[in-house]
Length: 304
Length: 230
Ligand SMILES: Nc1ncnc2c1ncn2[C@@H]1O[C@H](COP(=O)(O)OP(=O)(O)O)[C@@H](O)[C@H]1O
Ligand SMILES: [Mg+2]
Image (cartoon, rainbow over all chains, first blue to last red; front, side, top):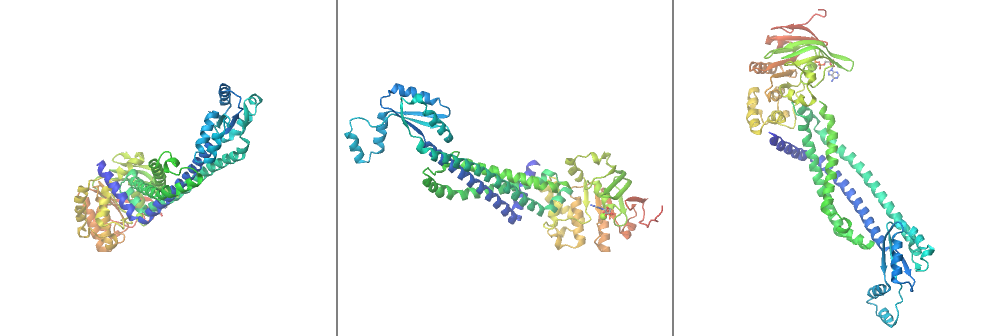
């Protein structure tokens, strides 16, 4: 009996889906639009985040050491700097290493290679590269480095130049994050309203049928299930449509935009959790929106 | 089978039923008569829970229907067949589908539905119209579909609200015959009507209502005009 009822309910839902094809299409499209907006918002947010992160990675404070300072002393200074609040990491680059890096970086440049080979001593200083936990921490760290106790070791600190850039970046990042969240909330609410009303319209269309069903002895769940399953059809279709719409975005748009921003625009780097999981999320959101809207919309007609 | 004890029903500030007492026995055929607005439909609606009462109580086989939970109302309704005053057929379904629908709702198996529905349609005399839609049928035929649907889950009680209301005399008598046939097969029938000629022909129990009250009860009665003061 149970499975008979289940099959019957699924069949009813499928019939209703096609019988009200216009409204079904409308509900599905509204849902797909919402999902697309949410996904695009999320992608833009993620893109800014990755970009900001990549720029942030390029930003650091370099402390150039005086040439007479010994390696042991430098390592002691490194330890001390590591203890400054909000310092993420301090990397020691010896003078030899710095020269090596420089040579490698300009391996193609004949002139530089020749000039370097003419030198008999290393012109580059040993360096401590300091990364902060947050962009906003750099000023404080630079401040801490100007403490007199470092003066005998550190020749110069190259932070002042980057400061406005860094500050601007941290602001952009914050604004993007807040705008993204606000946008997602607003569209989410619009979606709930539109979907709720669309489903209410499809239910209104079958108001009479629902009332008669109740009067001839249908249980509330017998009436609810087809509507829920219909919403599930909407949700699945909408998620698939959204995913299809996203293919050109992943294929062409993201790599292009990523190129401009100097980051990899591959799906993996923008969506660390993968496209599969993105689809699962879309589906979950669509199902929750649809099921709750339909349960809410049908409540009124079950009172007979 | 059914007992009304001081049943009162109020719509807004209008008393549709006023302290009604009535006892209906198994297998009876009762005609509930009275002018339009007397409270006949309301009385029937209370029995299968389309409306809730405001005073008194209704016992069905000694169960107070006020104690039946929301979730169990569907199971009460599956024991009662109702022919609605406005028929309430689904226009988008054929005669067969309109009847099958009531069985589906109650969870019957497909094979049983395929077997039973034609049989029921034959009882009510429209087997040949099985695949017609309501708009392709006459008033009398539609009324038969409505009766067939009410019989679909083999009710122990059939409530028929003005089933002859929109029919001509001949069709009216035929529907009446059908209801009597159903009653003879063992189903208790309550017929609400304001058609006097019809009731006078049956010669079974008649309950007369006026302005929400029962004003006369007769065994093997006639629908008679009741003097204003009793
Ligand atoms: N849903 C309703 N809302 C308000 N008043 C109603 C409603 N249903 C019936 N009534 C009123 O209750 C009284 C009894 O109605 P009803 O039971 O339909 O009478 P009958 O079936 O005998 O013609 C009438 O005065 C009618 O106007
Ligand atoms: Mg009536």
